[in-house]
Image (cartoon, rainbow, N blue to C red; front, side, top):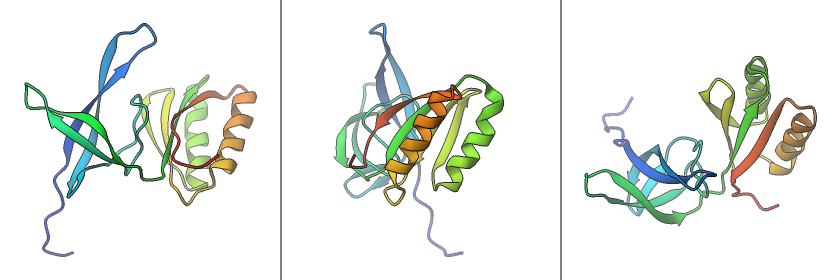
Amino acid sequence: MNDQQLPEHVKILFDVESEDGTVDLESLWAIPVSNGYRIDNIPFYARGVACNDIVAATPDEGGMLRFSGLVTASGHSTVRLWFEDEADVPVVREQLRQMGCESELDLPRLVAVDIPPAVSYKDVRKFLEQQEAARVFEYEEGCLGHAL
C-alpha cells in the first residue's frame, strides 16, 4: 500500500426527466480529475452518461455539484434491466459478470449494467435480447459508448 491518499469522491446531481415530464434527481459518485469529474458508479436513471465518463459540473445555489455537460466519453455503455421476477436477478448478474460486465442493484428488480469498452456489446446485446424475448426482464439502453 502506498502513502498517497485516494482521490476524494464527490456527489454530482443529474436531472432525470420522467415520462410524465417531472424532473427528479439522481446523484452519482465521481472523482475529481484535472479536466472535470470521472463518474465512479453505474447510472440508474441518468441518460447519456456512463461509468468512467469525464463530466463537467458546477455548484448550484446550495453548493451541490450539478452536471453541466459531458467532457470525454469513456467508451462504456450503460443498460438497465427491469426483472419480472426478482429471483432471476442474481443469476443474470452473475452471467453478465462472467461476460465482463459489472452491475448494481437499486430496487429488488432494477439492475444497472456497465459494459466496458473491451467487452463486445454485440454479444451482450444478443444475450439481452434473448433474455427479454424469454420475458426474464425488459431492458433499455441508457448510454451507448460502443459502436453498433
